Length: 120
Image (cartoon, rainbow, N blue to C red):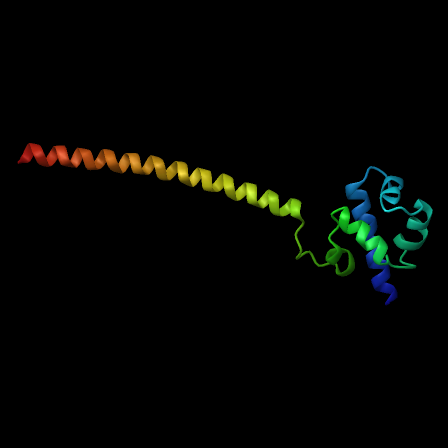
């Protein structure tokens, strides 16, 4: 594997650890490797995580595509749920507005009927 790529993966791995765990030690414990190995081997890009570590990272909601390539196309379940909740809120707002509009339309229609009855 390209040395530059290993270093980039190590940087993203460190970024994931810092973002999602209180300490590097807590992260190391979560993926069941010594913190010293994490720092000296993986973070420095001397080696890249193998399948066993990648599976553990996946279980910790790490976007493996992002980790290995830097691409952010894959969305985590949490992000999809957040977007779904936002869309539900927009839907409720639109339904509320549609209900209000229907009431106004019915009132206008009733007014127009009364107006036509008085003319007739």
